[in-house]
Amino acid sequence: MLIEGETADEVLMYARSRGWTISRTQLERRHRAGAIQSPRQVARGRGAGTVSIYPPGTSALIVEGLELGNLPLSRISFEMWLCGRPVPMDGVRDYLIATATLHDRVARVLQIFGFGGAVLPNRVLRWVAKIARRQQPAGIGLIRRRLDNDQGRTETVIRASAEMVAGVYVPPQYVMGPDDDEGNLFEAVLGIEAASIEAPIGLQPWRRGSLTETLVDATRDFAGEWTRDLTSLADEDLGVGRARLLVLRDFVATIEDMREMYGRQLFGFGALADGYRLAKSIVEPAAVFVFARKARAGEDQSAQFDAISRACTELRELVSLPLLRAFRGYAPTAELFSQKRLYAVLTRATAKAQWEQEAGAVGVRYKAEIAELFVRTGVDPKRFAVRSTPAVATN
Image 1 (cartoon, rainbow, N blue to C red):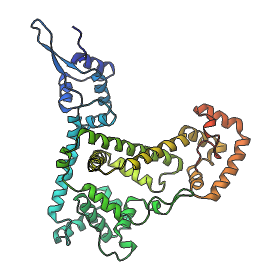
Image 2: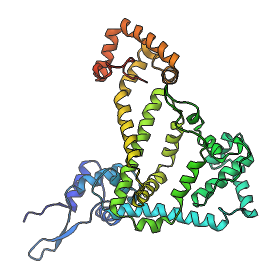
Image 3: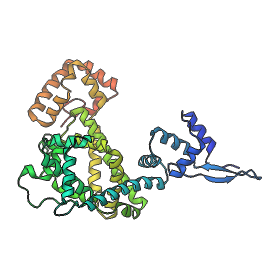
């Protein structure tokens, strides 16, 4: 009898052939946790009992999951699902439910403490002040340093952050000046001040005005009972959330490429990428949920995400990091392609004109050597033939 699928022994043997040793118990634990599909029981015939048959492709899924490292099984399910692998949704939902439950518990405690009220209780004010004076965890110390060790402003950021998580943040009705604008305080804490003052030639800074409106939007995203709302989301809704998270992931990866080219700050985007990476295990399941809930509510963000996706694709077409590294490793072009020079080219017209003049002269003088760099890195010179700057055009 021909049975389509893979027996447990075949799955374990495949894993061993790829350098992984797992037991039958560990295999069963993975299908119970939703990291792989459950097997079906098939009779051997003639009273010989049954055999567990896993769906085709299970062996490859097992190895892919093992290669992710020592992660919780529900996290492995989530990561595999993000990659489009055929894992059960039960495991994915378990991971999302864990994030939603954590959110709801923290939000409930913060609301019980009194966050969101017109006047915070004295015990809460004392707690916020105590937290603001600490140097640990490292994040508190960073907040203090970015706010010039100002105790009052540090307390304001901690209090507003707690209110956003609780879904009850409301900006102050009266602001005495820019230094007291809570949006500006968060801009300093996040390290994105450059986002409102610097931009590529011909463009406006991507951050305009105060960050307060963004804080209010974030509060709406945090609001509500996540565990309750998650149960109302269909798998198709979560699929929308996944697609939008993947666009966000691609955007962060593109930022990292651009940072190698222009420097770590990159108009404030660098700080956002750092924050994403540090809080990835929380940010990604939360983002899937928030994007899915917005889609279910009829909030159409498709045009926005399509534009981000197109921008990432266009930037990757304009940049060849292997060729950039080759230019930086070749003495005659090293300084021309340094982060400092390229950032100046990106932001100042005079620097761009001077760079083009110098690059043209170097290109003529070292034409054969530069052609060899293109060959060595596998880049077609025609890819950049229409641009005025070689290989990594910045306009």
